[in-house]
Image 1 (tube, rainbow, N blue to C red):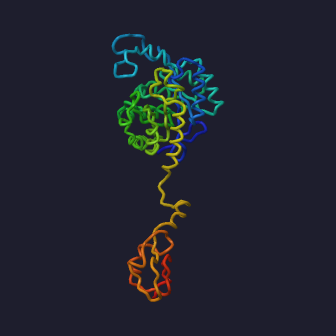
Image 2 (tube, rainbow, N blue to C red; image 1 turned 90 degrees about the horizontal axis):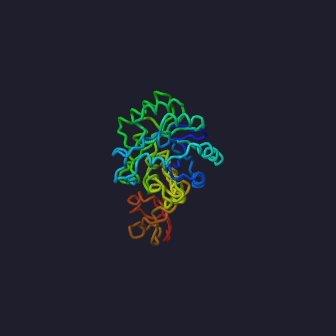
Length: 350
């Protein structure tokens, strides 16, 4: 799997998993709440916070025709798209102050732009990277504009076929993107863990020679942990201060204490994955003393025959290894052997 650099962070197989807290619309149009989400992300151990940069008018038109009204199968049933995006957008005038606060906290802050005007705005802001949302992966003109910045790109692949992902990757690379990550994503809100197919993560990395990761909309912290065991080096998860406060994305967002649990579990998982190794740890070296070995379990006089009744394979491991049992049975003792003596070669007659 490839590596990428995002400001001061190396992201890839030999480096810690990069964890992104997605703010989306969880600020509920309250600037102080947006700042509090930044601070909660930092306290919960996130490496970055991601915004979304659009307005209702750059996303869609205000229209109540059937294609513009969300179906009952979504958590936004009956909502007009323009109305929903008007509620969920992050005001552009907040961006500079949020970035300044993120810089103070040592957090990376970047965004998903949804049209070229958003890219132009974010370039003026000096964001270090770009995120491509799953729904925009097929917007090749937008991908070309993002790639032209020359900055690292992290792209979600929800809903995309393998061919569409290939087309997006080629578009990004041919237009200036040199560092790219692809995130496995299930674009359901919330997503069912059974639909995640995390085995795709290593395939993404190998097929496109990119850093691979997960953009997760499940409500279970086990899914990101499982993704790390499959090779994910980036985890993106929505963060809200309080699901009960509502908001367009709150239903599939973690609260700060849950996000902290996820981060801690990911850190344990990445340590546990480690690398291919058969080298014994120091603690295992100590534990070897308590493996099984051959012991004298009844007193044996000099010249006495070693039998299944007076020698046995038991714990601890001070005596001869169990593999020698058939060899020593039937041999004679060279000296007096007391019960509880670990058997050694020097105790046997030649």
